[in-house]
Length: 252
Image (cartoon, rainbow, N blue to C red; front, side):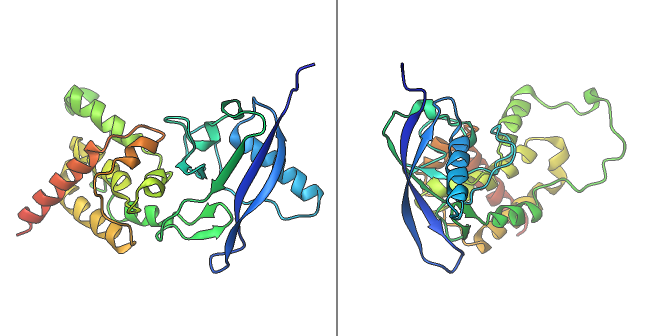
């Protein structure tokens, strides 16, 4: 009878807290090929709890690739080897029986490790709070035809708005830059009439906050685009730079 499970060897980063030393710890788990990567970690944690050991801490919520909560580096790749796939949607059928998988947290100064695979991504929240919203009083809802948006603008804005804020772009960037995340949030509002009144103030504040948080600068490696589970283009970064220059010139 064919084997229904696969033996997976894991090297997982364990770190008790932000100020503690961390290390890779070896584990072995029996996984079903139909399991998601996070379900495989659930099985490991069940085994550890039964043995009286501390389970591995990792982030997740929807497990549908929508919320951006999950995020680990799998064999050196943010979210793992599957293109445009969040780690919660990565399945064990993409691995072979006996494989060894290295699992680490996002690596960035602006994303300090809380415990094991969990990092503090509050820096993203603070960038959004700096200006990633529309605060003007728009009154009651208007008929859609009263706010015409060119189809190319609407499509591109939708593509940029698909960003789920997972942080894979930061983890993949050799400079730990948050440029793709910040640019996506700036660009999608800049393309829509609702975002136009605050566009200059928005880009100035969000770029400034990104720098305050300690993220590195973009140097066009495009690793961010390569690992983004939503496939957001680095063209957003070019648009952010144009918006920033225009805002600076307008401000004198």
